Image (cartoon, rainbow, N blue to C red; front, top):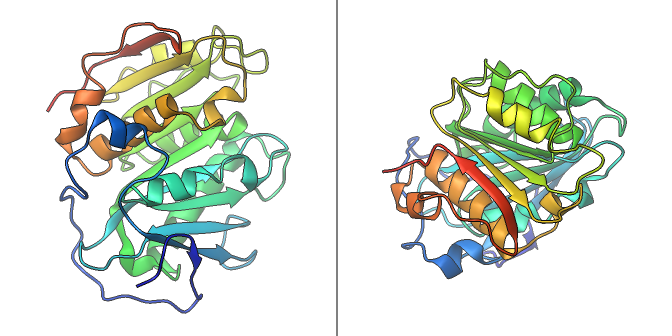
Length: 278
């Protein structure tokens, strides 16, 4: 068995199994959802530029077990002028909790949100059809995440592909704040003191405009900067993990961490949500 963090070979294949939405992993606790690592051993494989169409290059992180069928998958893209390394920690964190994760470098560091959305969707298509771990991916359970312009890109991706199971825009930068077409469960994460993508003109209007999604949430970090939503913390681990588990895996065990919505505290300045239950 591969051990955590081991780099896999490009030629890796595993027996294919039926697509499923069965819960993965042990019963969750406050400690487990907030932790930086879960119970799954994971491996990683580098994807070189030119391996697929519509995206640049990146790294795939995936659980090594073949005993639980296929896993939901998440593509994550960084913000304006940022490299993959800015968001790469999401790979090990989420793979160890039972997801296949593709962290990306953009085609061009200056790409705007609409281009980043296309790259996210192209990366998900590659994961399920051409990637060396395609037989581990349940292509019916896919999600997107992104920071800054990548967050704007994740909103566009959710609007353009309603079959996605979840979207998590992190400090999303996008001048267009009208997302009535988003029908994907979406959790927006912002920083109270963000001066690059101010929450009052971007995150909050975007959250408010989402009225067709079955569930939505807005998490705001107290005194948070533009970078805070991509700095690993127990709070960010908790809500990202719970949102993806609840909606990508359809695992109702995680609803308890989203509902009732948390009250403001020293970390969270506000949290709004439709309070998913069951």
